[in-house]
Length: 172
Image (cartoon, rainbow, N blue to C red):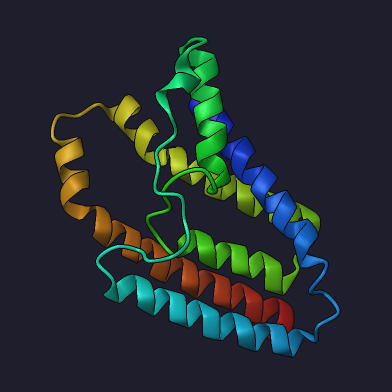
């Protein structure tokens, strides 16, 4: 459970940082930000759907095993913190980029940016928590066969939800 706490806290920290950066774009008219967001969300979603792997900037190295040198609890928390922030290791779906663009361009209240980041961080721990809690044989094989489909579905769902929320805040 330290892992889930770490991923959630890491995501919340990233959400807070993006929320602060969003303030720099707040003077730009809402309509312009909405148009840029819509174009970027559609472009990233299409890119995610047609590419076999996500060709966006990300660190391709995994988090080193040395983070577990001081014990499984502390190491799990640190690993989760680094994994949840989304900047330290692989990001297999465009959904996190879409959420980051949403925060930057919609400029939601600070607490909403933190909540969105925390939700991203927690969602990164979901597969691991499912495996720990369910522990069913064949789970990893199922995930391996369907991971890209699940990632793409997540991107499409995130695109729809974020565009709807952006329209409600900026366009409606």
